[in-house]
Image (cartoon, rainbow, N blue to C red):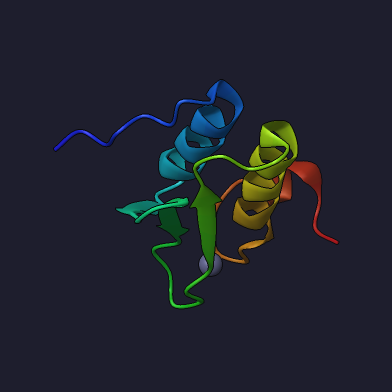
Length: 81
Ligand SMILES: [Zn+2]
């Protein structure tokens, strides 16, 4: 079951970044392209919009949410705060 690709390449890359770290993509409706959820008990989630005003900022926002998840691997490489 292939996921529908996001038409914006920055956002598509951010979704792939999340998926690479085990996050699940759930398809949304209307302006909501979908929701990303972390697979851990902290239940982080992030809405992905179809047409945000600034796709690059939205992509960064998605990446930041993934990095903020305390259980998603990859943080220690950049140092814990
Ligand atoms: Zn989480």
